[in-house]
Amino acid sequence: MKRFYVLLTSLILIVLLVLWIGPLNIVKTLETANWILILLAILIHLIVVGVRSLRWGFIINQTTEFKKNYIVKTIGIFAGNFSPMKSAGEILTAVAGKNINQISLSKGLSAGLTERFFDLGIVGFLLIISALFLPQIRYIAIIGGVTSLIVMIIVYLINWKESRALWLYSKVHPIIGKLPIKEEVLDNLYQKFTQGLRGMIEYTHSFTSFKNLSIVSILTLMSWLLECVRLYTVAYAFNVKISFIAIIVIFLLANVIGVLSVLPGGIGSIEISLTGLFVLFGVSSVLAGSIVLIDRLISFWLVNILGIIFSSYYAQDILEEIKKYTLNVNSPKVD
Image (tube, rainbow, N blue to C red; front, side):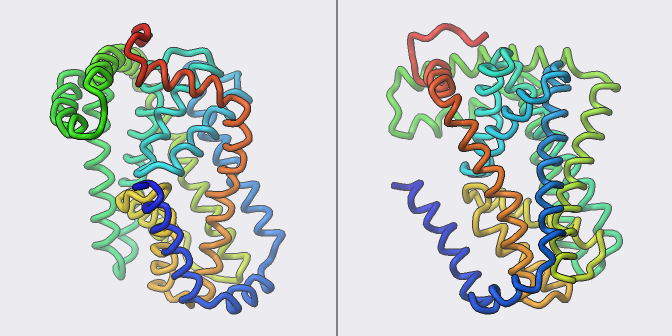
């Protein structure tokens, strides 16, 4: 029931945005769009997922398995899009990786958290650097960048520092214990976490080198800049001329807000944030809303459709793995 209310909140926010802009205004604006550029934006986003797939393959040392990596990343992105703070993304990516890439769950979780670490770092870095060139939104961008870097530090402690990660979990475990979960399941969860954590951190340390981390940094930077290029292309399709630096701040800030809103995939909060930020840069509300709705249709719903297709094919195996490693008390240890 709680999930229903959260999703309902997201849908209400989108409906309010559409009503504020005006449905007829949106339709009229869409008629003026350059659909060739919108098709180009779709292609760019598919390339974005491809770059993230290359990064995943590099971290798990399967760079030649591009098709498998693309499927795994699409499933992971799809799962993240429908979970608060995209928290299910790493877990489902790891589970899908175990079934499709044939890697251990610990290795998959290590790779997922490594990706999250670099995503947060690059987002924080880009926001702070871009803020130097945009005085009208400088402080908001810096706050967003610093927030991203703080979360990055937490991910670092979990993925690289075993003692700190166990300490963090010891603080969270009592909170989980207050949820309606059976005691044996809770004990099993703690056991699985500690066992999986050691294997996860071992792989993280084995992967950590200047060369490897540099390549992951480059691929991460490429993926985020391409996302901004996609939004810039959609804006250009509506004949909106805006600086690329402004697009970087608008896109990244909206994503930070979407994560902090704890709404699944930032549905509603990202749309409103993007629209509001475009308006701050002088774009009319009608144009801003139209750009945002089209861009989210491409970046959010297109991947979700692919995610549904891929997940349905591997659903049985994935569900079995989730049960095995989270709820089944008699299951074997995490490898």
